Length: 589
Image 1 (cartoon, rainbow, N blue to C red):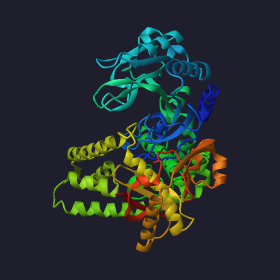
Image 2 (image 1 turned 60 degrees about the horizontal axis):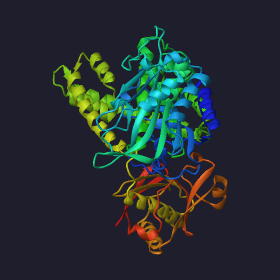
Image 3 (image 1 turned 90 degrees about the vertical axis):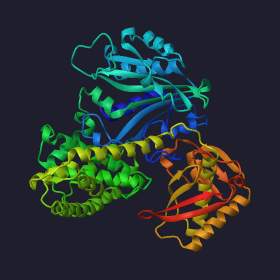
């Protein structure tokens, strides 16, 4: 079964169970400063999992564009991907464990035709704080999963984890036996032939600050199934890159490199190029308007493009040919049926790739010169030290393999142990930062975040008045301390323009305008003139926030009830974000 068939089957199945199909949210999380990208299907739905009413109702299903970039160095094996698609279905205070588990079993066995004997599940083992999830285990048994195929674990079957406060609960993970070997009677989750294919999270508790767990009044179900992994399972391949998803891209890479994917010397490089090219197309084709830069999402995009070019070099691909354009065209065609913005932004995608390729070729030359300088500075020593090796990696984008290769040609060694230590220190810092960032998940949206969110609406309206109607929001990042707002404008703002925007926003605050929430069909909202940052992400019914005659925006919230609650607005900085996009940082005093 192809990935397109899988996605369509999944969505139609849950639609038949009363779920509304909602579009994928864009790649940048809205109202969530904790992550650069949406990393899971549930992330765009956080406000609704916390109790806010969703305009499409209490049963939802979708395919979400997701990115995980913390472990880029793991890309190149059989299963890891930078961009991946997550199928999900949600119950917002509606059905619970029985329906969720029963429907998962029905879809897997009746619609995807997976034999029951190839399935096994894990459930929450329980501890001295919360009881074991025997309810889930009994439901699985009633459906035909034998006791010996149900394993109880503690750490892996609680979401998000026992330490974080807020909504949480047990989950049940579904595994598939992916091997030609005889299926063991007893399920051992540690056996790598058992591959997790679906996770159903049951949010039924609130973890309080005092450490106790109380039952939630509104219990939610949040599920996630990875398209890439399940497609590989259904197509009977153990290497995700052998699945139909990647077939045309790998074939094109073989064609431009004149090498074979099945030759182990080249397999890893081809996987990295295939993975990164798909991620590049999805990011640069998103309506968020992300361009390569040295910060945030733009930095990730730049790094992906540069890694792609480095590995293309390993395959002796003619870097100056149109190889990257040809691969991008295949991916655009493949994914446009689910993400229409790719076709609409095709020219941008191809230009981003070409421009960044030209720039990196220059950087590569600088890096090679830097390497030559480093060799001269060795004064007869025979080893490239860890600092030089890491600088080449971090500043010039050289993979350590390239440094080793160049050193070998110059009859030199590389301090690999030292480099690895320095690299691990760098990774630890990155992971610590990422862990801090991902804490956002279901953490509470505080009073200040709510104020800043409303203030972005007022600033958007003020910018339009001062700079012109071409101004549109391109992104925002909100914390309890400040707001950051990206908008379309191709010139640096003058001091007078900044002053005018500041004064206008403060005037709107002083006017004490009520903030009204309206619900209507998306078409009606557009006809009314409501603005939306990513119109394609919203379903048929939308929430429109009206602030007097000042602002009318389609939005997911949260907002204050009156502008007088905001305090005094002050712009702290205005700068370039990317080509044609400016960025304002502001505070409320």
